Image 1 (cartoon, rainbow, N blue to C red):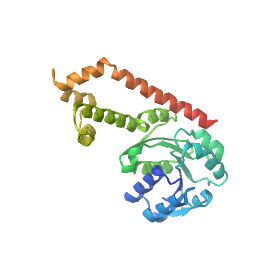
Image 2: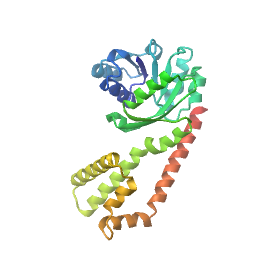
Image 3: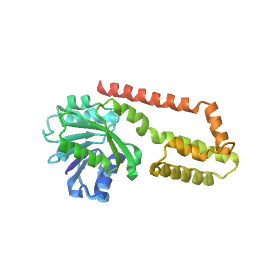
Image 4: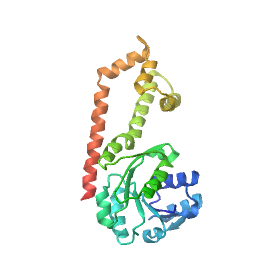
Length: 270
């Protein structure tokens, strides 16, 4: 499978690294175009991929074209690609909020996969929600699964609307966890721990809890109850969470992120 990347930023690099690490592609199978010459030279030096300054040249002879550019730059790229994409090529867009309809209208191309990866993809532990147009063949869907699955896990959705929900949960989700970590560290410092000690405790606690949740057959609620002894310290803390309506706050925050994802999608479509 030969893949062209338009955009060689962090997420583009994450996919390239994953494809090479999993031996799904060889360096000679991958071409990258980017506006930054220094970035291109870095990718060539680090991964041995082919680099090009013109997007049109990069996509020649490639079965898959990955759009890994920022949403604010996508329209210029799409307009440039119009008339140059071949019928058999698959376009995979990871540009947040950019609707399939926008990509189709600006490129006059029908075979589109839209995906929403998240930042843990940079270490191979990401998850990507994705959908595809009806023109995408079974073989092309397998290509998409390989590309997105190389970064961690992937989930296919039959309706594009679900990707706004994916954005609010897994796309933004890492930031929610980082915020909780920040606050937990600050709380530990307030108790009297040194900040480096607090950071070590919190990071390893979250890492261990996440790994246990991932490998256990128990639900998150069951795991929480395992830690929560009646009359104990955990129960006291959770009582405070309940009194301050943490559940309601999280629900409201997720809904706000979902609404914003929909709004951004409408803006990008216009």
